[in-house]
Image 1 (tube, one colour):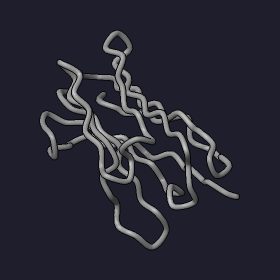
Image 2: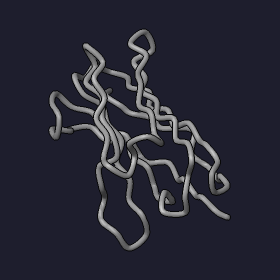
Image 3: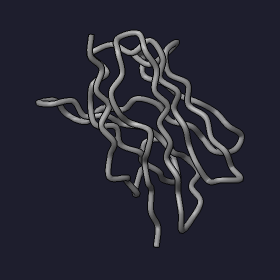
Length: 116
């Protein structure tokens, strides 16, 4: 069974940090990424990483604050989120597929809430 399981969401203060994890099982992927959906808004791309060689991509709002990485031995992707703002509050989804922009497998989502 192909599955993505996110973890690491929660509550953070403004300026704080959280680290999200996404563990893949059942197959390996060429690309994994993070999307988020805030209340009343559409789902948006945050960051992605090509598995090999590791090549990260970020949306402008994530550059300089978020760092995406992966551990091939664990088939797991991570996203370190620093300098969090209330605008980062959203459900964060892990996605995976065979190419950038081509995601065929999604996780269930993990809530990130940033408060003052």
